Image (cartoon, rainbow, N blue to C red; front, side, top):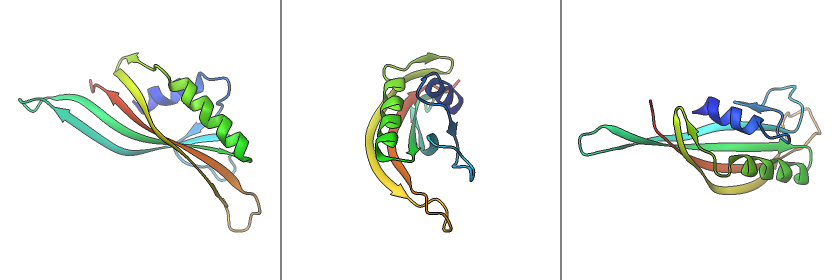
Length: 125
């Protein structure tokens, strides 16, 4: 599912880098993803019918407006997203939050961040 998510995000012309962690020499803007939860729904026979995976997409840029624009591009790329293999049923945006962080102690550069929280509903094959 994560590979499908990365591929979907990279189809947007406004998103050029999607990584599992912030690399030390990463050029901004960048989207960093993190899986925060992975739940299984089961039927009465205990068969897995659906997975709900929580994903945080941290949209990082050198300005607030850059981070917001990147978060907007992420939101647009994931609207009405469905796949057939594995079957992605929906990517539901839960929230968007904003923050900033200093990436390295010795650096004066500030990275601005807009985080997009998603729940992806999909069937495991």
